[in-house]
Image (cartoon, rainbow, N blue to C red; front, top):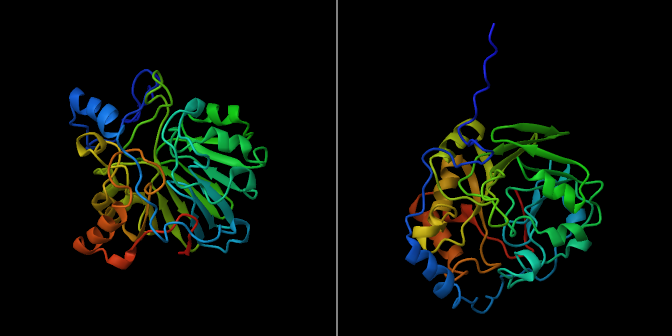
Length: 323
């Protein structure tokens, strides 16, 4: 009997690269728009004054977190206590998102330095971009030998090189149980790469976390797309969705990789989330729009889409909430 050849998943391309789910948006920008974005829009972009209340007055006490408590450390970095585990998502804690001191820079510092983090049970990585894997911060973290890292396919080599001994790589729709916490790696609409020659050679995605009492979705970096209705049907509903609402202009470029604030609400609705917490805004200038416009549009969209303004939450950097 001839053994059947395994069917390659649709998001796995020949040659070891990956692609977005079917029905995902694509960039409509031409070369002129890309050049204008890089050399005109971003060259003149600078953050406005920091609004009052954007930074919490005191740093969060991560080691003392209660179950179902989280803190926003800026951008896509959250600390979460869930299923008895202290989890850190997409650490970007130092100033620069790029190699050799080059790249966009945080205009609001992290409320906690990497070397001051308590011992974590899990670090969760959505993809390998510099503003989601901060190698300098991870090298400064004191518990690399004791902390498990969960990441997408193709990302483990980088994390082992940084010094983590235990790394679990996951494909979309795979589930792993870690004691009382179940983690499912899910699709997202984005891309990967840390240099000119490795684009999409590692996977990207989002995560579902489930304990006996709560379900939480962490979006990493994503644009909107048809896939979130499927995720909501298969893995939802969720108590909370942590989703990106910033770095969305110009839309002709960013519609393929970053959700707008309005799309952040539509994603939360597709997921069946009770609350949406906006992230990926107010920390670093990746795109030229006003970085403090996003939460205003986010709350307005929650009203317009009948999600409920009080269910669209934005935290100060260093702020905490129970869920």
